[in-house]
Amino acid sequence: MCELFGFSGPARRRLNRPLEEFFSHSSQHPNGWGLALLDGSLPEIDKEPLAADRSAYLRARLREPVLSSFLLAHIRYATIGSIERRNCHPFTGLDAEGRRWTLIHNGTVFDSPELEDLARVQEGETDSERILLQILRLMDRERAKAGRPLSEGERFRVLDRFMVSLSERNKINLLISDGDLLYVHTNQEGTLFCRSWEKGTLFSTSPLFPDLWDWKQVPMTRLLAYRKGSLAYVGADHGRVYVPNPDQIRLLYLSFSGL
Image (cartoon, rainbow, N blue to C red; front, side, top):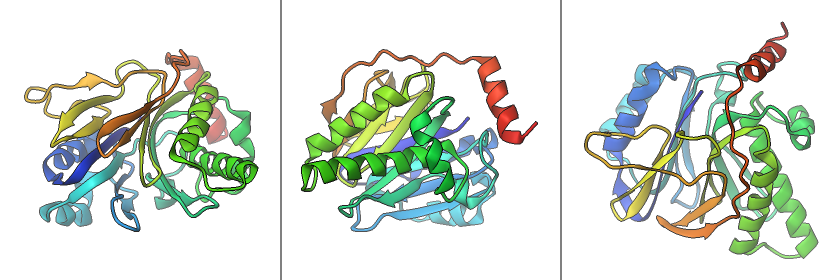
């Protein structure tokens, strides 16, 4: 479907080498690319609805140092949603207290009634964008109940509960930023990996430089949160492993295409 890449660390690092390797996978994921640098006061987000290896802009961008302590990148293989910029990752938005959330997703939501009404208000067509909109809605609801800004731990618990419900019957591989924490979730075997690097942590759908670098699978079926490259929170193991079902996938795509 798509591939994810992320870095969380204590200081800015030059990320050109792993990014170049990651974006070299775009021949198998040709429908868009995105890059978000998240360690400034405002995120720096670039994306285009074409293969990364065909982007003159991205080639020029990677010839210059890419320095960041908090970064997300995505290459898209379109399954739901047309090949347009509005359907490219990352997706980003503000909650009611002005906190910016940024999300990249590799997976498919087959069944989630709580997201259905968001199709009327989203800019694009993807289930990934609806996940982000639901996160913003849940954070706003919890803030209204509390009557004050949510703490870091409260934000984690809201997102943890959402991952438990969303993972039932759905493939949910996500990297999400709230500006402070990097939230990580996977529920399919062998589809998200991590490794220590430059005193931080790298994440990738496919191990990069596998002959040179050792990777380990991200623990499945639980939400993790990293602060400056170190694990800060671990959610409960919900046990909802996604196993691909070809008939389920075929019916979803036929429904989306209107056939």
